[in-house]
Image (tube, rainbow, N blue to C red; front, top):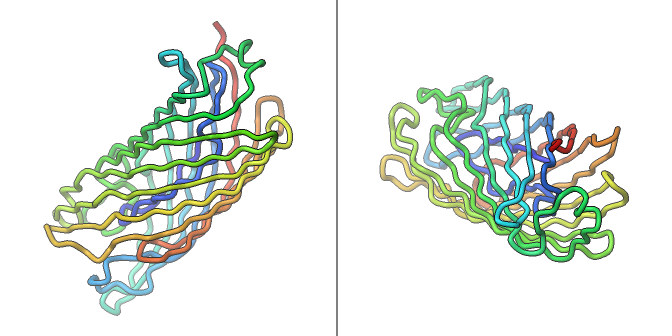
Length: 295
């Protein structure tokens, strides 16, 4: 199940908590998902900026497509997410109350995942006899700068830069319990048209996350996840800013089967800010339908 967690361009999410990413699946499996999420909370900027009391709420409708296939004998999948977003934000700039309403397309996301150990590429017939043990996989997510962006505004849906997230993950099954652990890096190119034509740089963000998942029956499962991210210091026009991040994020989710090959996932995400970074809560739902390609 694919889910986009959308943030403002002024900060990056170091904890994208998606359980069940590194699991095996038969080749030729397709999944189409539609969802809605609502976030509410505070926004943090460089303390040197004259901005106080910034907060807001935003909504995201992600449209996602996932397809599994075999790559050099290993199970793999490609994921595409297109997020439509809007929101209202407000705060005090130099003691003057300001508001900002946003609406449009946020940066899309493309991800390739490959399970290197413990998950061979299997046809649907072969997959029926597959029993998972330990799986080790890698993935690469890319976000091109295609979202709505206005260099005259400090807050935007698009980031006007490329973002890359390589990740290594491990998944282990014990009876009806699934345990997952993953580490990733967020890498950013420069935004050369930031807030009036300035050059905006951001150092890498490091993140680690884990999930405990309980499966009850096909399509019915529940998960608890946690992630920690650190780094991401920003530099504007060559001047380092006091924006180094240390943040925890926690989530709970449950997947409910509806009709054949269809399910609904409900989720809640909350953050604990130790040092800078936006601190918000996210609630949402995602509907998914899957099918096998005919040969």
